[in-house]
Image 1 (cartoon, rainbow, N blue to C red):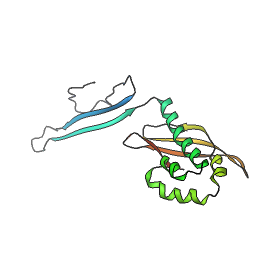
Image 2: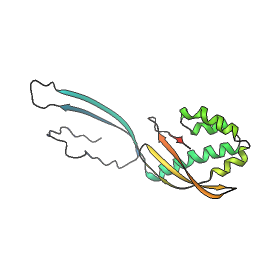
Image 3: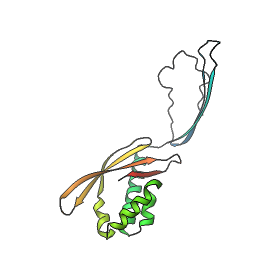
Image 4: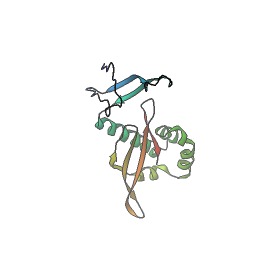
Length: 158
């Protein structure tokens, strides 16, 4: 545990930084007191509790690829209910209808392509896909993921 007992400054000097040596889930707790010194202005005190995960980038990439390929493989197996679990819950009804209207998913699923590249972020990430379209040849698309408060990555845009 790291503690900064007191930071008394007119302005916060940039960002407070701390380096986490090991991956894991951590909680930041802070009490922020704003006092301009004027007795006519009430002091404002805010408590902050924020949980977050520290995850190495290779693990994040591996996790995102797993979520994508799990969805793709479930579609190829014609298992729409399980494929939908990779999607954010708000998208599931819409995409269930889309998947059901696509026809033979054993043919459509492989056309989702392969992961070619990506941009990884703390809460939002994007994977670029290399697609193989039978009619027009190779192409590209991207898929967006968001990490929910419980730390689970789900697809938010196809």
